[in-house]
Amino acid sequence: MTEGLITEEQMVEITGLKRHNAQAAWFQRVFGFEPARRHCGRVILTWEAFNALQKKRCGVLEQEQDRPELCL
Image (cartoon, rainbow, N blue to C red; front, side, top):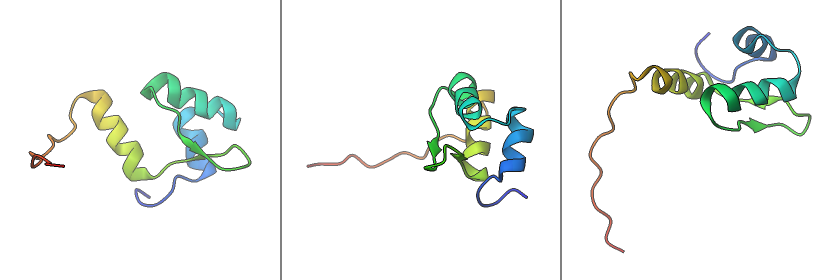
C-alpha cells in the first residue's frame, strides 16, 4: 500500500526498529528531521511524505515550479 499513513508494521519494516523512540531517531539520522509523533510516541508519517523524503535523499526529487513573487 502506498497511500495513507504508514502502519506500525510497515514502520518496523522500513526502519528495522520496534521502539518508537528508536524509529524517530532513525528518521532524524537518515533524513535529518524529527517526525510527528502521537501521544504514545508512535511516529506518524504518510507514504507520500516518506516517498518524497526518499526521492530527496536520492537526488531525484521533481523540480519545484516557479513561484510568483509575493508583495506584502
